[in-house]
Image (cartoon, rainbow, N blue to C red; front, side):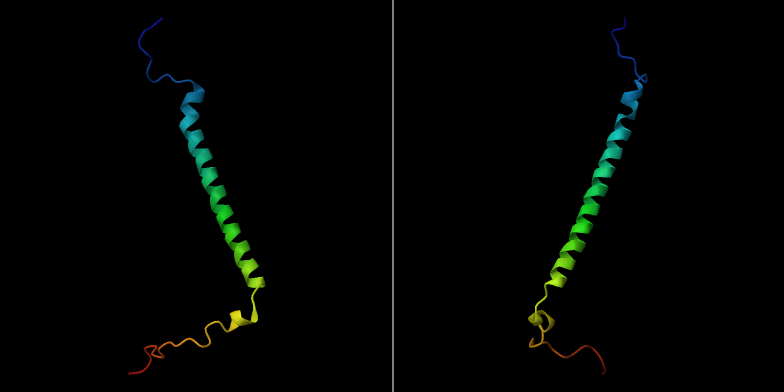
Length: 72
């Protein structure tokens, strides 16, 4: 029996632990990104279906300068 630990000799499970953790972390980030994308699309569709007539003309009376940089 040795008092000093043996370096470089790891069991099979210990050597794959960092890769396994990295894999699960990437899966979790992917699921979160997919959830955000799907949630955003559902929210946009929900808001689009519930428009009121005033939404079509929401900026009709706004006062904006008419200068768009066209001409001299």
